[in-house]
Image (spheres, rainbow, N blue to C red):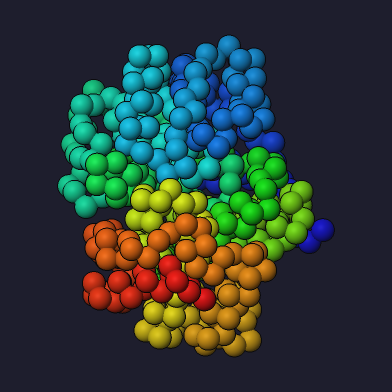
Length: 393
């Protein structure tokens, strides 16, 4: 076992950007974290896809042994809906809970964070929309304690308050957040990802890779995020094929979980057109987010990389490509996608061509479109959406 591999099999504690407890089996420390944080009655929020998985029993058993009462809210949709958040908020308040433990995939993270944003105030969900001025939180309205436990290595949603939620009246996803909401601790336990099926391992892994790529190419000066993006990209590129081929390889699972976390930190800098389009496709057609990103990614790289030659070379060098030019990088991504059996168009996952103008118009309003390295016109976006529906690579 190499030195790097051994790192991923041992316990590590980090304090940046929030307290992070990394290591196999660390879910078993949940009660200790609750006691240290003064949490007496948490609501455990998870997604529908995780509602019957063993880690929930592990979590509940650990809390029960320490006599910490809890309830489950398991109704977060794969693409979280505003109605899901309302139902979870109702359970939180009626159950007199004092904290949120968000465990599961990215939708669980987003659902738990969204409930936290509303728990102790009377604001509307959309008051926290990213483009708005942040609501003022009074001294008696402080956000509840939040513990995040990702069980996929993809979204990197565990260290910040940002959450993507679908507005069911508009059929659009919006980013909500508040700078004062920070997880009290994020638990990164690679054992929780071992049971993830091969296809979800690949889809969520490409999601993490997309975060790293898009964040790095955002044309702003943010060396902290850039460093996280490049290291995240390097880890995902190295360990994702291993995690797919050897699902019980704890070093691969650990490398992916850390890479995903770093890529999630990086996208505080912003994202790009992959996400702008993917968000709106997911809001309308309830597609799996990582898979949608994976299909869209090559076409957006073709659009963006001619304008980012230095960034392309840096990313290509970070993953040890001999051809560090635009086509060499795109060819590498395409090979990965082919190896993971990613469909070559959105039409293959049920997205029709008659939505092109509508999706392009919505994508223009997404905050991620504003940080893409090339500011697209509506005509450009329509052509890109049409391309990814018909032939993305």
